[in-house]
Image 1 (tube, rainbow, N blue to C red):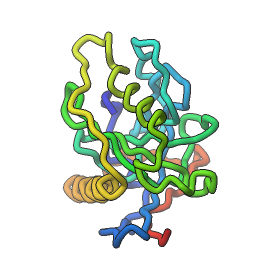
Image 2: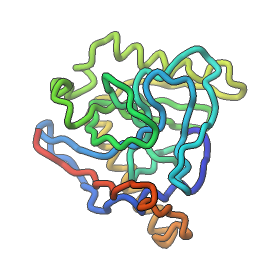
Image 3: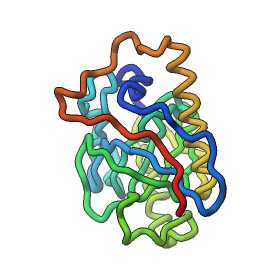
Length: 220
């Protein structure tokens, strides 16, 4: 996320704390919830206001590029940039802002912007059997990978003071390690804040939002 729309740590209030501490090899998947903010094909950049749980229009992209797939964040994480870890979910049809998707990762696009590290985790829905063959970044067709890479390399062009640099792909194992590290950062931030986020956790019952499931490790 490249705009601060409120308290960064409020996902904990809607997120189970039984997060995994490790993965055990190539036969194991880490599963987690991704909250969609921007549907596939959009130029509008929406962000969730973590204080209220509502969707805010941040800006329209200055370039003519569109998001290549649904984009959002991994629940209960704190990335190296101080915001929830960004995620791109490969879906055939776009969902909608606020939609919750149970996912697993196949890789990560490591990049930096004008503020520092800004990693993008590449995900597929756990329940989509048509994408069961995608187990690692090397299984994604090259053109699809290049299309995603091109988007993130140029989508901030024309925006004053913004840039993207130092981009490269890593595989599933590295992506899972960063997710687990981001979960630990979130837990440490919650503990340091006293665990109550200054009372800023929204009452999601009025929004019809159920409790989110914690990440879990499952045999592939």
